[in-house]
Amino acid sequence: MRFLPLLSLLTVALAPEAAAMDESGPQAALTVGVGALWFVHDDMLPSNDPTPAWSVRYAWDGGGMIGIDFAWTGNTGVERTAAQEMRVANFLESDMKLVLMPKARFTPFASAGIGWGHFLGAEENTDHAVFSLPMSLGAEVRGDRFIVAGRATWRRIYADETAFTSIGGDHLTTMVELGQRF
Image (cartoon, rainbow, N blue to C red):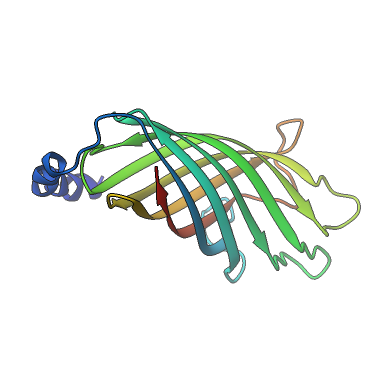
């Protein structure tokens, strides 16, 4: 709740930017990103050192406050314990995005959706395929032809039976993304 006054101030300060941008229709963007991943416990505290993560994202918005994102995110080098060394994690996700200032150059957003993930190189007797509920907060800076975004995503992980999976675990990723608008 501490962020609401800050978002209100940004909305008022950046409102003139909205008039300067000519976005009279649907917009799409393709971005690539790099960042870090942390597994988290139930108390949301990190359980490991950060490991490298990446993303490829296609975003579409109809010129309003609602957009749709499709993303492939991944991670490598994850080691939760010595017995469970995961080499690569891959997630395919689809999110609905709420864009707070759709016509401004700087625009904060929130998104949530559903995803499917798979862990390669994990211990033999574990569930490698999982479902996830990704939830993100972030901001974008939009130019005429480019976009720069930063986001933090928390993924709640579920197995096929909607039971908490033993190897995937909830995790947090932070990403910086750069891409092209068209």
